[in-house]
Amino acid sequence: MTSYAITASAIEHYAGALAQFQSLLGNLADEENQRLTHGELEAMVHTEGNELLRRLIQGHFDQRSVEEPVHERVVGEDGVARTHRREGCQRRLESRFGEVIVTRRGDGGRSLDSVFPLDAQLNLPPDKYSHGLCGVLVEEIVGGSFDEAVDHLTRAGGGQMAKRQAEEVAVQLSQDFDAFYNQPATAHQAGCDEGKLLVITADGKGIVMHPSGLRDATRRAMEQEAHKQQTRLSPGEKKNRKRMATVASVYEVDPYPRTPEQILDPEQQPASQRPRPQNKRTWARVEPSQGAVIEEAFAEALRRDPDQRMCWVVLTDGQEDLLRQVAASAKRYQVEIVVVQDFVHVLEYLWKAAFALHPDDAKARETWVMDRARAVLQGKAKDVAVGLRRAATRKQLDQGARKPVDKAADYIDNNSERLQYDRALTHGLPIATGVIEGACRHLVKDRMDITGARWGLDRAEAILKLRSLKISGDLPAYLAFHFEQEQRRHYPGPPIPVAVPEAA
Image 1 (cartoon, rainbow, N blue to C red):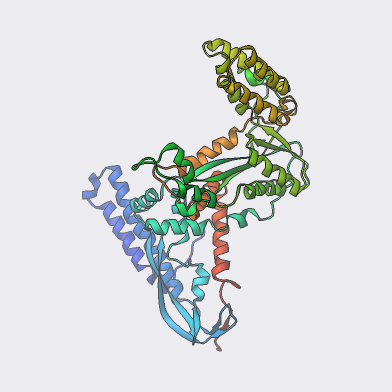
Image 2: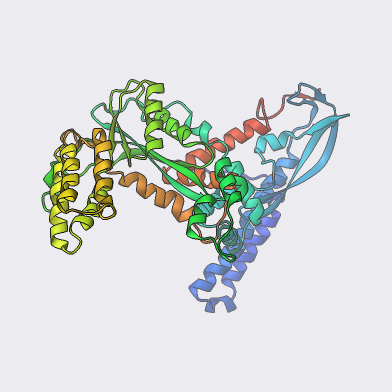
């Protein structure tokens, strides 16, 4: 380990930290404290250790302040020289260990904003909350409520932040989300194995919003409602309190050929192990339209595979608006895609039809569903649709009783082009949307549906972005990118404004 010599002048700045360290050592060695339990010992060291770390940072800032070079003039970003110097200008910084004070020199002039070279060098934020404290906050707010995050900071005993400020910080921290993902793909991300599948999948999930955060049509519908109950919303009224978030995922996966029997019979599994998705990026947005998010997904896929060497697969649940957006994006980017509709949705329709045709015979229902599901997987979707209608007619079901059967037949018939599971299974394509449905629950519902939560649009969008970064494994890299962008925004040009040294 490299050792460094500390000068006497430098050590003066750390006198407070040395005193705190000696106090901590004294407490550890104190005779009375020899009877502490290990838990009590941990609590003491945590509290006093936090104060020691705070004083170390304070000492460093004090040293930087004293040793800050003096310049005859400092040129600001506007190109105008500042010739008036003010010593001892202070600002507070809430670090993750507690509040510290940064003392620095200000350079200004008549009718000119002051310039603080040390602020630029330290990349101090425009507010009082340090990057370290913001990083701790993010880890908390992506998993729980803002109240819980603020309580965590209080319990940790270091830097503090009020709930309103925590919400504002979350919005600020998320602002470089698009710029981060619009960076050119790295060598690892681009030039992928052309033998893999490139999968795009998307879905939607509603979030309860403040009226100001609703889309115009939803807000108008809400305003026209007459509440049926005084103390709560009726089921039909709740739909006009939500704004739809679009969840998208892009990943690569090896082909996994299977047979219909292997899909339906758990005991007939392929000899090879199911491949895991690789380089998966999952995100949710509530502010942009569904079409904009689908276009983001295609842009992400094209960033990974610009020459379209992989087989592009789009997994969908069959929602019509989403299918239109997928077709529009594919046309706009001029890419060839294979659209596969979720097989689980087909099963749901078949089960509803089975209850209509065999209401009193559970065994017959299961056999009936298994036979039709196997036929659909074998590429006979249209035949199954025809058979469903004939079965309802043979049973002489009335209009109401046969409705689930006709609905299943219409669903299969209308989507038959995307139900060519025989080809999909032969080529090893995925046929279920479990990845995106799990993402909707984990990314959106688990956080945004906290009891009683009503979201403002900017707060909801910020939390979804930050959770997306966390789930995709990109949060540490994003925060480093964001803080770099912050320096460019707040301190443009050189890291320290151009300075002309004083004449010797």
